Length: 220
Image 1 (cartoon, rainbow, N blue to C red):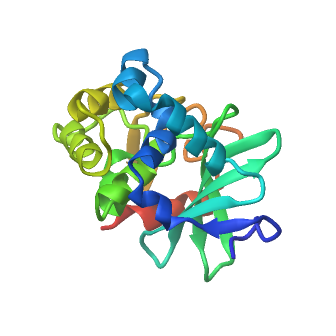
Image 2 (cartoon, rainbow, N blue to C red; image 1 turned 90 degrees about the vertical axis):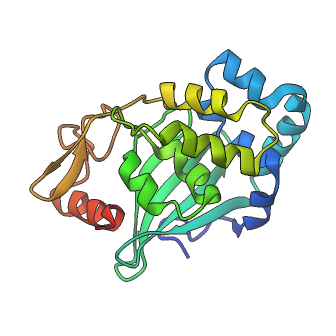
């Protein structure tokens, strides 16, 4: 049970992770570039559209869960309200019965939710890397970031030019773009104008929650 979503038709949906087309649907907000879209979807536009409709069913909200630090998890929830659809990325602390929304990937977007360093820590395999990739916003990517994403795309999708698609996705980094991260008093924060982890934003998490999120994602 996810706090705040108790009345919603949540459904564990790990079976989708086996389907190459799922990843194209899931990463669609990162495929803003026309070239990236053509390379990613190719002749699969129609099939991807049908799968997208299935993922957005109002009667069944797919949920995926990734363990992180401090006994917390990240839930990826396809929030399928009629007229208010998006993907929520929530840090859930079962002990505190609290789920903090780190990212909303939708028209009225909020993010980024994590840095590359934090993504790398949480990503135990190709699946978790791509599942959490839409949360990313980082202006200081390491030299191997594109290779890591390309390898995951090659493993899980049918994309013929995964390196090119990975490069294009990481260049734009979705709707909010790259952000700068720094450590302040042991807590990692960013300067993203739409991020809950930027303390200068009016809607930012309070200091206690900023510290909680940072500790759960830090991995040190």
